[in-house]
Length: 295
Image (cartoon, rainbow, N blue to C red; front, top):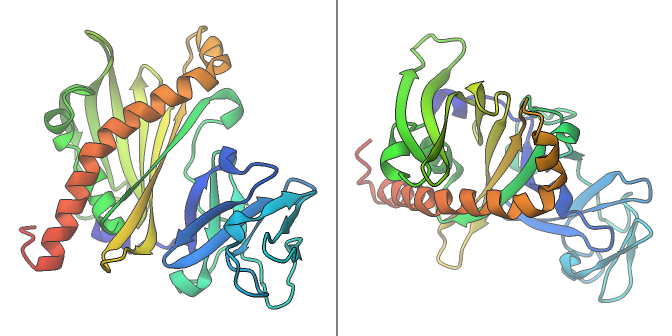
């Protein structure tokens, strides 16, 4: 966790799924206390910027998108993604699965032109689904949960069996990864044994990649995005988890065609896990904030 916290991000934050960007409505999020609004211009390029109208501060999340232009619902002020009336765009990136925004005023790091998107199967040939949840904790608590593979089979017996941590990172380990042998419960008593590798390429990201077994090459990316304090002043963090599944089985093409039916099932499975794991992360934050954390 300490080594992950020290890695650069270029000030990029994941805000949601690419498919959440609709042609007629913007995607609105709060990142580290800053309102952000995102939409696509007439050429399909992603545009992002402050979520407050520069005229009288209307929430741009309630606006509409017409011909690639964001139109404020209060007075009709139109933003086409270029600087206007004090409104300045922010760098944004759509990697085909997730949408990112760069907030230099938050990250305070050396900015990069693009986010460091983890290697994953091409979205065109994969089955993708994105799950989002919010917890009362900080990004470090989410990352710490994912970097504790030992709890998986014990805490999630409905999803995992026969989990063994085969390899852990050492003090001077260049790969800095966990290797886990685990069987995923597929349906009933059917299980799929795999070998997976967990890495933390940044302070807010953990990647699980299947390297052997069913679904070899598939990736689960867990991104933790700080939202800002709640009404009680407690930190809130969004978990944005992307599943990018692939398979060499001939029948996988059929599964991809059935993606609209399968995505809700994948999100439901992720939601069941995160109901438990957010309790883990929230408890960790509560103990840290009170000075009672044992770790």
